[in-house]
Image (tube, rainbow, N blue to C red):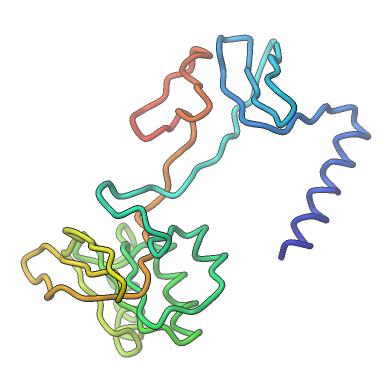
Length: 205
C-alpha cells in the first residue's frame, strides 16, 4: 500500500505543478483571517491569502482515561498492525468498528464488541441491523450492547478491561483494544477560529 500511496502523491504533485499550484508541506494554523503559519521541516513560513478553503478532514475520536499503551489503537493503527491479536476488543459498534472487527475476525482474532447504545450501527434501521447482528453473534466471542468500558489496566499478560452497564460482563483480558467511537473534525487543530470561522466543541466548522 505504501507504493500505491507514493504513486498517487507523486501524481497529485505533478498535477499541481503543471497548474502552477504551490504545495507547502507542514503543520498549518490560521493566525488571522488572512494569514496561515506553517511549521515545515525547514522552519516556519507565513502564507498570506485573500480567500481560503478549509479541508482539514477529521481524526479518530479518543476516549479519556485509557492507558497510553501501544496495544490501545484507533482505526488508523489497526490498518497498520503487523500481527493479528488473539483477543481483540472493539469499543464502538458503528460502521468503522464493525468493519475492522470483520477484517480481524477473518484473520482469526477472537472479537468482542462493546457498544454504549442499545443497537449496533446506531442510527440505522433496526430491522436491517438485526440480520447482521445474528450473523456476527455466531462468529464473535461476545457483543455487549448498552455497555461502556469503565476502565483499562495495562499488564504484561494483556489489557484488563472492566465494564459498566445494566448487563455488564465480568472484567476480561484482551491482547489489543480498537477504539472506534467515531471521528472528530480538525477545525480546531488548524485554528480556524483565528480566521473568523466558528468551530464547535467537536471541531466542526
